[in-house]
Length: 410
Image (tube, rainbow, N blue to C red):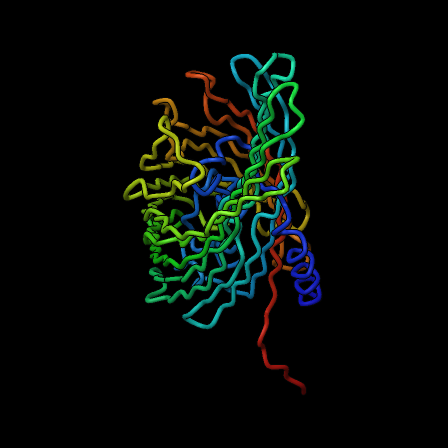
């Protein structure tokens, strides 16, 4: 049954995942877009804290976790989001439904492997400046879509019952398209410029996880990972059209190399296995990278090292309860603060949020359905900028089963 579910889901995801607009943020104009992936929903619901060596939940942020899988695990998730975008004068709203991740983890004794597809960043905005009521003024509209996805494959190895190591390779690819239209009042013709960037590159991620007992019940969990910096090749093209003019100007394609910065992530927590956990995660970039392309550079914009701080955890009233289903539910919560690495008009763009979630076990199996809600704010209305108040409703499935087991007959 699980194999039929996986095949059906893969067909659905392959149809919708590259046609969606994964963000509605004006800030996605800069760099390679908004960072999309923030962990599988189980850990995202804890603010991004992912420090436990879990046997039935797939942690695709640290490849060392794959070695702790007890069963083959298929995980898929998506989000419906609403955003209120505010300036010091105006307010607008946006909605979107997005695919978040698709991954498969396979235990292999002391080894574990995982493969998956994740939208890494998204571009999605439409900004209008309507001056059609002003004589000789120029009205404009700027629109962007696309983003970067990653396909990854990783291996983890259990050195001792307490200590795992792992590594994965990531292939990043995608396309970003931006269109700008300008029209002068009382003039019929408009000028349209379309820029496209085909992006591709490879980078690597390594990690380690260690856990040990503090006393008979309490455990200490630690997680450390490093994503190496990598180049992202951008093959660019530009077309300019003038309505009413039969000539279309196609500029020669050019290629540039963007640099994705390296990232160091450390987490630690304490808890009682299958009962509760409280932990924290910190992530830092080694440098600001080089993400500006020829079509989105601006004198008032620069990039900085991004960083993230999160605290969170979970609570399970009674993991083995037979009489109360709600006692077997996993309740999650977390807080996060993030500097996204973007400075506009000398203002750092920050993201502050709170997460809540619950994991519902599927009776008779190790599989579960997870729900989460995330709300927070990003940016500011100071210095002529935009503040985004957002709320995201997420859902994921984690299907667990024993594969590759030789059948026995008496």
